[in-house]
Length: 316
Image (tube, rainbow, N blue to C red; front, side, top):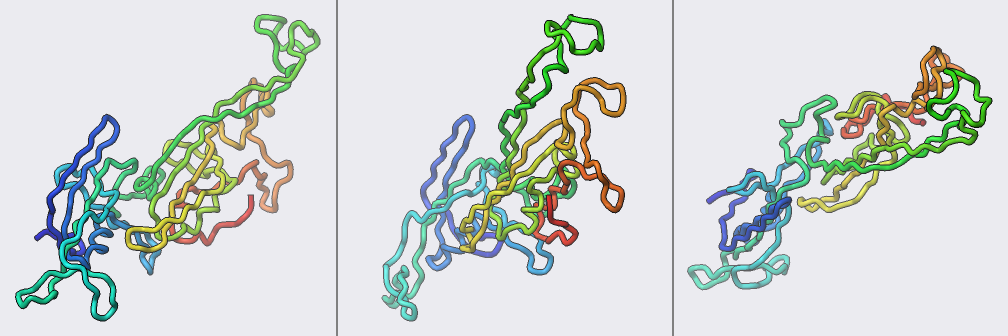
């Protein structure tokens, strides 16, 4: 008789369904197990997450995969049928199902038939030992759905800093209304919104708000340092398969290729360069001689940890 990793025994029951399309695949299998074990089997078919009580490291008990198509993971389980005679337990009076034993008494546990749904997921299902470290590896590589969508920012620029192409000598002052633009221009600037939906967490990550109104201090995935400006995360309470309170967390940022600590200028403020984005800093330095940039930085990978960042200094 097969069993789960944690030793819950089951058998396959009649009933199979498969539904395949160009972009999604779903298959169902029926399992039977002793009636009292149905909650445990459901939990282990779906998988769940938990924290190490000593190190606060996140662990995942992975969902079951389809025996013939391991690319499909279990995403739902439902009770489809019961086998046995309904009666009340002697001590708790809870409803239970029993079979007649050899002596004609209801002494043997009945069965629960569970239908498990296996699907191609929108996130990677990886074990603990498959999650590495660094900007390309971490908890964001599993049980996380990343979305990207476009947005537009209006960049206002003085009109007299521009002229009609092909008119006037190079670097001539803007004193000819037929050569130079006389009104300011509002230029559309395409940006990218990025979201990371982190699924089925056993607790709220303690560093999740440290990134709000800050930029990434180091490269994260394909985004170079300073190009992601983060807003507050979105927290959604959920109930995990082990019947404990959990959370889905969504981190969101706006990507700006020229970084958020640079501002558009028609000429280089420190050399002879032309129009472009140039770094900006506070006029006065702090006690250590450092000029503050427009946005402070933070290592985004810290937000994916359940170990509090003791070195974090609050403030924007």
